[in-house]
Length: 480
Image (cartoon, rainbow, N blue to C red; front, side, top):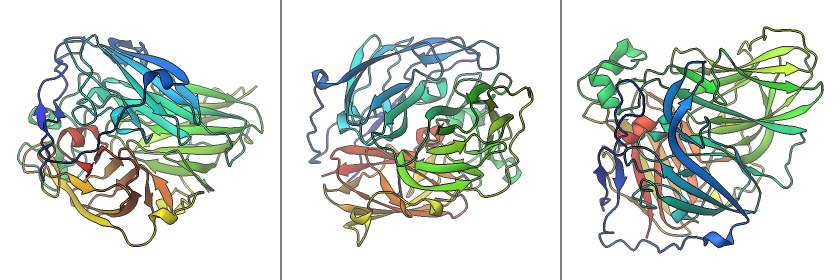
């Protein structure tokens, strides 16, 4: 059965101070269920929350490199305010839309398996929040982990409508003295627009393969187009004025790395130090010591670092699919007189998915599945289009499942770009770990994952490259 979604055009149009500004792209909206027996999921009552938080989305300024840029942001800052809540609490976040030009918006709680009405996907789990309106999201803070939140309307994430969300563990399986957030993202100096508009205007970077990403013909397997990013940020700061983490000798620091980028895969390392990866996408794993790791848009890794090498050290996140200057932060010991950080060399051991071993039982994800889906990821026939099994969302079949199903999904990538594929509302087993986002390698790469259908509703499954999602690389898992 085809989804009844249609594309709403030109949300959030109008100038906010960017040069050559255009509005946000359209978002899918849902109409009649077309006979589907979609479950009636009741939202959690707002007055049942243990903690209340507010977020206000507005136009404003930020200065990642000293130069003032106009954009959209939460509570006047980039990234948005840190939301931190103890495991098992119930959170209410009242989101007010103060965006200009009658722009609509939502907030998605990336990685948290909220009840369906709180998932923040316009046209699938809620109507978008209209100009001047407030919407209350209520959800239980479980399981603990490192998450983030962002707008799920068009390309608003690329306007810096994003921020960290931490659910603190009662009894972590690793020891550490304190934790810090390393929030990574890319940024533009002009307003985001669909890939087709960038490419037809000869903007953006074509990557490899002879620059075919800039071609203006059909989609083509060899498309490697990338937005014209101005650079990369750590906690809202560019590499010329990097975020600094001050540590004491022999401290154990838990670094919560979040890839909140629109379209960048990073390789991360810390000069002079190894990292013990303790969590993947918020879920605990047996600690594994590495020198670096690669993660795609939407992925998170927590690492424990022992401060046992006095000095001043660089933390770098290299864009593996771009040629921009790496994102940088500084790890500086108390009393260190060194002013120039020693940067990582990126030699040694790099994390692989098969290094990750879940701390929790995987029995529910074992055995023969009840449902199987084979999904092929590729470019479409039009510039900037991205499809799954040849269908461009929202004009694409839903993926029917029933509560209690053990579901197996095989992903085959027939394009020249990797795809960080993200499932809403669930964790899945990939290898021997639980995650919510997984990179499918380019050029015939393949990944298989399993999940249990234990959270009724309609759940988006999509590439977390914002431009590939906008271009149609998405489906909906529909409980029936």
